[in-house]
Amino acid sequence: MGEGAGDEGNPIMTTHINIDPNTVERYIMELAEHGAHGATGVWRPVYGDAWFAAQRQVETWMQEAGLETRWDAVGNVWGRVTGANDAGRGVILTGSHIDSQLPGGRYDGALGVITPILAVKELLARFGQPERTIEVVSFCEEESSRFPTAHHWGSRAVAGEISTEDLASVVSYDGEKIGEVMQAAGFDLDAIPAIKREDIDIFIELHIEQGPILEQAGIPTAVVTGITGIRHYHLTLRGRADHAGARPMDTRRDPMAAAAEIISTVINTAHRMGRPAVTTVGRMRVEPNGAAIVPEEVYFTIDARHPDPATRELLYARHEATIKEVCERRDIEYSWTLGAEQPPRISDPALVETFVAAATEQGLNHTTMPSGAVHDANRMAGFSRMVMLFVQSKDGRSHTPDEFTYPEHAAEGVALLAAGLQKLAYGDE
Ligand SMILES: [Zn+2]
Image (cartoon, rainbow, N blue to C red):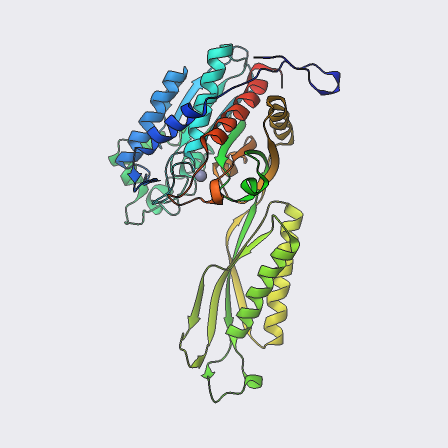
């Protein structure tokens, strides 16, 4: 424990927070036993036995840390310590999810539930009751791996964005209605509206990076400046089916030729604009799909993302100009519909500053970066100040049992979270 001076002659009491990597590793491994899949994976669909066992484990850890716990009516597990002086200041909430991809890894979401428990445990043990109220949450069904249209079911409930109709229209891959599954599991559907919160001032989500940037830079942790905006184009190009041998190239109306040019151009556009712009064509359908037929119709998707609102619009404008130019030049009819449309979410600048200062004071090797993936934090940013923290992913791998994060890096994540929480909940920030 040491005291340091802040910058610009403004003294800030700094406490060194030291987290044992072995402790973090033990928590990760214990949670991974619930729904263990193969050597290193987990299989934890929401409302399944392994998921319940994992949520109960989380609740036990919260209680051991000194938090008062409760379950809400969708299955989010909450832990709370009431602040000594929290009148009108709103709650500081931190957490993530423990449901998984099928199969998924041990770290996605789980690290953002374990690290707050360890961070708050450390703070309560060392400094006692905070000035401001802190809550920790383990959200349900972030991945939509059981219910594909659940769209962050747990944080969605907290945002007050679940309707009665959703209980019947959100259906699992096996055809079960989410409301019926929840009822069978013992949840009170009538209590869902009461989950909505209006008293959350700050939401902090620690997560594995799920990409390779921190590892390439040799940096364990990052403060996230914003979450990328997403748009999906569902694009259909129509030309004319012709004989692949008899029809000369210069008289074809070939939608595949147009698709190839568009796909190559949009991918290059994102590449040339530089990080963090990304564009992906991941799905394609060809009619009639014959080796000796010039296609009649080609359908494909374009997933394009950028965290900066203006640059994102520029990316989309360039993609749309490409589609128009190529199709008009090649005499191809085209139309598109928009699928996923998520605006970027900017982290609260003051919170980014707080966590960058905390990292600096703790002597943690850190950087700032945007998130290319969507998280519960997207929902939460709609009604609270939001910031995310990233911890390095080995080989940038995620959504696979091969996902791995070094315990030493995870421990630095706990220290960063704890140091920021200390500033927010014990200080006057
Ligand atoms: Zn996640």
